[in-house]
Length: 242
Image 1 (tube, helix red, strand yellow):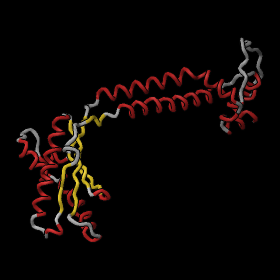
Image 2 (cartoon, one colour):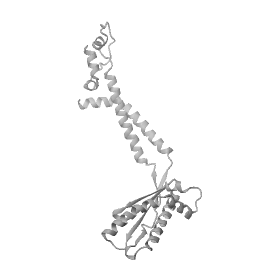
Image 3 (spheres, helix red, strand yellow):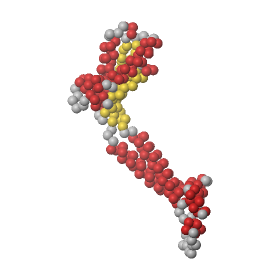
Image 4 (cartoon, helix red, strand yellow):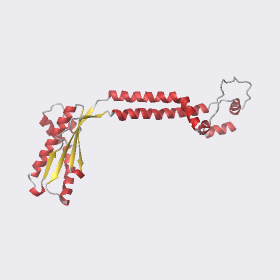
């Protein structure tokens, strides 16, 4: 199929592609508008040993994984609620808003709190991080001085919460891109349907096995392109040859 035939198809059904793309883009922007914004505050805590040895480093890595579970637990959420004096949320609900990740290669733990209120998210992240540091310090007091670890808040503690949902650029791109692809598929289907229409007297005779007594001349003969031959179902060819 030559380039001009592709251009011909695009010119013929370009309005369909544009319409479908516009509708999908409008749907994406509408979806963005009705979403409730969510904000996430991030805080990183460095956990460092008093001495670096192969065995001790592996122990710290294992501890980091345990600490992640502790930070995300309902118990930690309950302590944060008590520390902040909250009364409108329970430990189960708050624990779902707290996530933690162990950055083992850097001996760090990343804590994130997501909420509809950016100030609330930052406050909870700060308190959870401080409680975690206190836990590490309390545990270190029971250890041998050579095996102790220290936990330190990085970058001054919890950072101001930024909006993490809805992801406007991603959703807008998905709406426009998805609409463009859908529009192309619809245009392809319309072109296929157009090429399957009976367009000449000879085709009428082939389909109905009856002679054509007369026809209304078209202003412009609809030339059948190789695009239609490429799209036509094999059964259609057989029907017309029979």
